Image 1 (cartoon, rainbow, N blue to C red):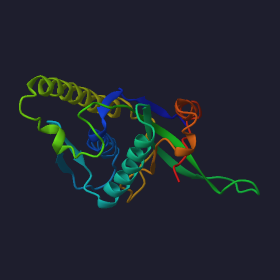
Image 2 (image 1 turned 30 degrees about the vertical axis):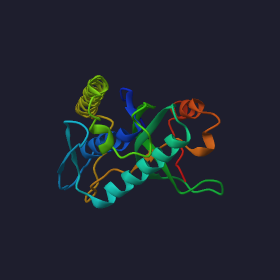
Image 3 (image 1 turned 90 degrees about the vertical axis):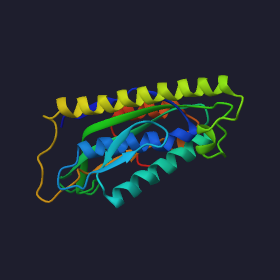
Image 4 (image 1 turned 180 degrees about the vertical axis):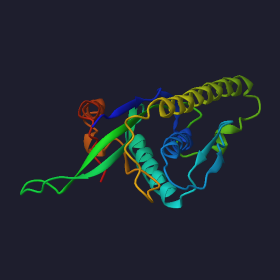
Length: 218
């Protein structure tokens, strides 16, 4: 099976921006690959002047948030490292059973790689809420302008990623499997760096790219 891969533009974000950025990107991808009846829900980002669409599925939101929580925990243990998240869509196919194999296998037909560079800045201590970063102290006009400029750059880059997603789903359609009756979502998995791979750093990500079969986080 042909597996299409989309490498999304790398985003340089601060720790407090991770959750909103990942929610925006992951939900946008899943929404554009939704099949059946969904209840679209517009979501306005708090940190950026961007609105994206969710499928309106509570369980889906919960699963995505759980993966984001795991990713944030990994980032806190591995600061100042570039990282990658993989969202994969697959089909479950039955195969001839044997003593050494399962009766089903996953055939990946599309993979999205989200590339993040989480940076540390003096005003971005991990213990603070994002509200403390949006409002600057009086007299810090220079710092405030610099942060406003940086936030505008992140917002512009995030918009580029969203356009990249829309362009990809509009152009790449031939590889999408036939739709089964009653199915709303294609099976998917979200892979994040694992703590067990911390010693290898980017080598783990390279293995993911080479094999095309991400390992699940337990």
